[in-house]
Amino acid sequence: MLEPILEIAGLSKVYPGSLKALDDIDLTIRPGEIFALLGPNGAGKTTLIGAVCGLVRPSSGRISAFGYDLARDWRKARARIGLVPQELATDMFEPVERAVAHSRGLFGLAPDPARIEEILRSLSLWDKRGERIMALSGGMKRRVLIAKALAHEPDLLFLDEPTAGVDVELRKGMWAIIETMRARGVTIILTTHYIEEAEEMADRVGIIRKGKIIMVDDKDAMMARLGRTEAHITLAQPLTELPPALAAYPVELEAGGTSLCYRGGDGTGKGKGEVAAITKALIGAGIDYTGIDVRESSLEDIFVSLLGEDA
Amino acid sequence: MTGWRSTWSIYTRELMRFLRTAFQSVLAPVLTTALYFIVFGAAIGGRMPDLGGVEYGAFIIPGLLMLTLLGETTSNSSFGIYMPRFTGTIYELLSAPVGVAETLIGFVGAAMTKSLILAAIILLTARLFVDYSIAHPFLAVIYIMLVAAAFSLFGFILGIWADNFEKLGIIPMLFLTPLTFLGGTFYSIDMLPKPWDTIALFNPIVYLVSGLRWTFYGSSDVDIGISFGITLGFLALCVAVIAFIFKTGWRLRA
Image (tube, rainbow over all chains, first blue to last red):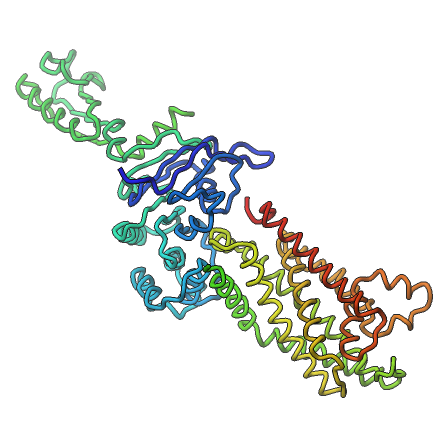
């Protein structure tokens, strides 16, 4: 087991005159993983990132990154952390290349034009290197922010809503960029509103609500544990009772006996297998059907159901 | 120690910002200074007696220099830190491994450099209108640098304190400029009737103008030691306030 790259223990943040933005957060991030932090608006995602990156002063708790205590050895820790903020905050009058070079210098690294070129090329910004940032499209501006965050070659990168307001095509392009960064060994923590994004990329998922982490798990384990298969089999003739051959399955009759509903499985494909077995059992019992609708629950379903339970 | 690279990065970026508006930054003080010399130096100055053996046109040079220096230094520095706060780009500075000293040297150093460039431009412009010589050029440069440093720090505090553009402009406009005008820029304190000559001594700018005038002409309203002392005291006060701001994160970190 590798040493954690980031450890947060008992972290709380109380803003004057308001609720707790963070409430006794414990979180451990492993090196090389993509961790998705999910939560509704105002859940505390950005505050949590801010506390690690030095933008927010924690009220209590301890944060250590790369083994360094952030309260004491903040220079050593911050030198290896990158942040891409949610807002498109950058000097709009500055040319792209200079802005990225400035970020590298700000983090105390010697100028390295070859490295800056490599970063800009990897983000398809090289052709725009001499342009003022204000002249770029929204998607390109966001890529400039990523380039600035990568300029000091961080080992841990925070992406706060990296695809907010970005169209579907650019979003997929952004996912590819994030995958490339992971391939280089960068640990990535991202917050997102798009559950699909977490489902696509994350190794682990954390769900935060009202400043509390309510669940952290491997994405696949979470899907296996909380995922479900739902199938609706439309029958050719209505049934008054379930045939004995289906007694072993979690099925019930609906819509006046014209539809057989299955709710089961575990997100690993077990549900699909059981639905196939049910259809065979129906044929074996001489019961005809006219349609099958099978649906696997998504991370979004799990997310919504978890938030609902916790409400 | 990689801190100097961070400082250099902040410093050069701030100077770039200055260069982006170089035309306005240079032309405005040149024009203003020229107007002052035309009005006070040529039109009115010709009818004024020499003050302490110095021709009136030359007498007002240190005051005019101080007027521009205080205004430009304060506004350069306050904008330098306020704009990143306003646009949100301060996240980068706050998340970088950069301490108070590196940050201050970068921002304040850039503001001082801009001010020294402006001071040189103003002195060259003045040369077009008045013949003058500087009695203590080395001390003059030191004094200008001290004042520039103190008011860069003051501007930095202002830029952190202000939470809107109105507040950003209100201190230079309502306090700094009037106090400079009343601080002996265009006259000697001795010329004021009683009790205004005593009241004027409560204006801290009097000591700054007087100090700079001493480095130019070897005589002034106030002892040069007091002027240096007050400038250094103000500098120390600003450093203490900024140290407090960074320690507590006031208006910088949530």
